[in-house]
Image (cartoon, rainbow, N blue to C red; front, side, top):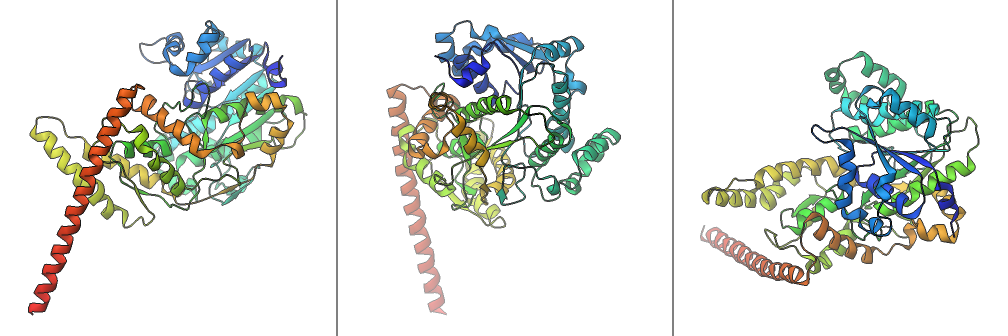
Length: 499
């Protein structure tokens, strides 16, 4: 028997942007597996030498669609690619495709974005802000539109500590209208040169342009049946379609990946700061549920659109210290076979001291390894990796050394309005999430999906043997260094006594 949300999506036509990204693929899979959606139009950027239809066909080999294709072998035939590019005028969509979308689409899930923190401002503005305006304009042309979900981020207003499910236009130095007008009049280089002045208190171009995107919604959405979905840091799946699925190194999982290989040993992180992470399958479920709720409660008024936060529950928070301890305590169970050293991690918050600590923890050992690689005729690589790692740590510091409090009243009302059956199928209950169990699944998934290690017991046993070997070497090195330090202090004291 169909649930309320399943009934809403039956025979509907959905347009998704960002569908080839991490969240996008999980949303597409969830739609196809749990509903009888009629058609999914997917905005896809053409790539040289690769037809857009080929990119959809390749999904049949992606493990995230394995469960779906076992039960519905022809499911991907309901996905129709639309050639487009958020960097292009009018999103790069042809007139023919635009007319098709305007006449057929009933639900829009706009998730396309660049999530790079150091993206040049003119690029981030084009993708995260101007493309949002173009999507709103396209939505107004859709004669059968029932729901439009704009995927933002819980950190779009990160310049304040307590973020409610509301708009904050006062945090911007200039309105979205004015900034987009400037980008039309000035060249890319001039806009990039104005980055510091335009960002104001925002820590990077990502959060700033996402805030501008929300300002576009506030100013230009009008009476569209629209809502904004603000997820926190999106990481591996909790349970579906497979547990621990992840296809990128963004967020804390990237840190764990580096630690697991024995490459990253120190980071700019406050152990007491909240680690605001959410499983990607929870995000997909809530995005689909918020579209249902938007259509069910859509009333053409001039009131601002509703906003929904998906962040860790106040009664089930996770600190970075707890995150580190949980992952390290079970690290041996999912040890990788290709580690360079024993996995361990130290956190610090003093940014001026970090370069010195990084020199001893990263750069010096990296130099030794690179010299050894050169000696055997191989290309050195660790020092370049560390340069990139250190740069990214400085970019992430505003988020790893600070905590926020997020209001969730709208999200709570959305959850309570769902039937028990829908709550089971479209679960996003962060209060009930068991972090210990979750990180067991996430580390197992990271080992398989990102590290490309086999799932076989023999591979796991080999990883554990390597882990124990490096653990012994690590303890031996610590003992040698401790004895050397003690000997140096003893010698120094004797010299002082001699004088």
